[in-house]
Image (cartoon, rainbow, N blue to C red; front, side):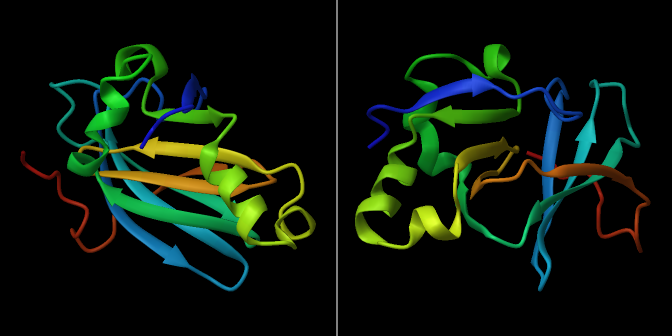
Length: 147
């Protein structure tokens, strides 16, 4: 299933976090927002909440990490690539080009970004890099998840 996937390190504020927990995904009119809670180390009890904002023209999927185990047995490890990656020569992009004739018009110069969290793997295809913004914790719904 992951034949041809080449995960390259993508340097972001999340790359070297000890733990990245998925909080929510918001599909808005102007952007797709992924909110994650990052913990720099085992001793970091508060962590940092991050908003990762992708432009409106993007495709995304969230798949439970357990269903992506094939990624961990191929190529580079998470320690090498970090929690954020770019999938080079993405089979997902190629499949979209074959199945959607207007794909290259809608998302020119498409890039496959990947955010790995403790329970989900978030894949996003877009032509513009996302922005990262620190966020303030809300009403407590961003509590650290236990394994």
